[in-house]
Image 1 (spheres, rainbow, N blue to C red):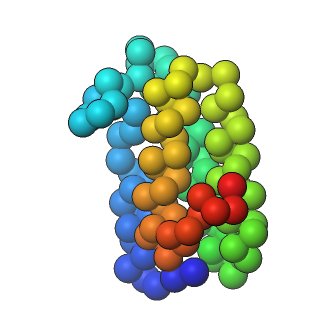
Image 2: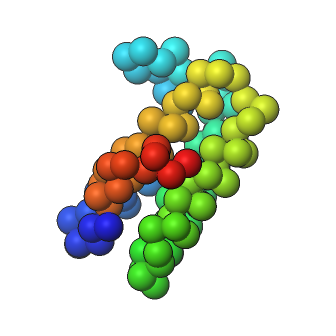
Length: 104
């Protein structure tokens, strides 16, 4: 894993972004309540990962956090379930875990 000041800043910037909004290949959440609910879970994951990285957590702990977030989207529409994996992928790439899908 890569936990440089730059990678941590990328995570903080990503945390601050508005999520589940319309973009290429994703129509956006069906309504604002769903968007906020989904964003809250992704933002919580980001907070948890930043905390884990701050205490030199293992790769397995980071992956477990991501898996918990994926599992929390089980009842959401397909588009949101797929989009959360895009967000997780972006987070994982920032810290150098490009192969994360091999473990989740």
